[in-house]
Image 1: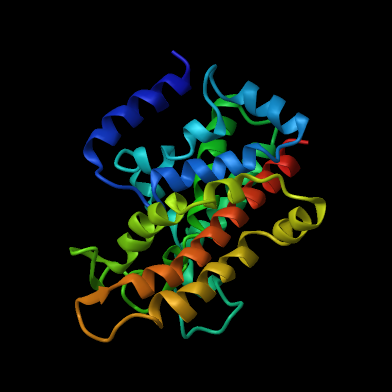
Image 2: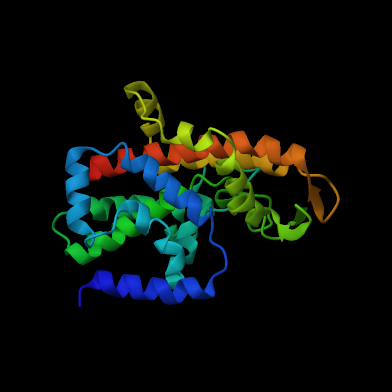
Length: 262
């Protein structure tokens, strides 16, 4: 049995036990769909060889969350908690044992590119990479107010109790995607200039876009009471940030894959 079959079976069992996933299944698939529209011919061909028949980067995008109960060592790879009052540019102190989303993206991009590795290892690296590029663009996967990226901040949104991190993971993202025209804008083909701007740098640079949003909006716009009751004004302010991050994530994922799979 090929390793891909193991991946799929594990994902089925894991999915049954997990009610919601970071940055939303819809968000991860949309990021991958944006990327897919910007892949080079060489990258497309190699991805088709790495993945089993019928699978694409869109279908595998949620995999790293689905497999998480079986791969507990992967938990720190989904985020980095950089305090919102930390000096900008210094992420290393907040990446214990060099195990965080930045180093994970760097490591798996290198493995995808390494043709000397077994195909099974490169396939797994591709699955992780597609997912983590999405995660690093969720502001609360990067910014932190000493509350585990908002997980310890109780909120009420749409009359439902939750926490700040979860609200950004799923309902705010879903509402953003469902707004008129958003999906069409996100899936538009990027010109050379937009692509070049988005792709500049790497994970160690991109993390600061998310951190900045967490600092200047996700936390700063919160009401003072606890639980914080989030209304239309907070949601409306978040939509634009989320749309921007989804677009950047897709274009940056495409750039990483085009470089790794030349």
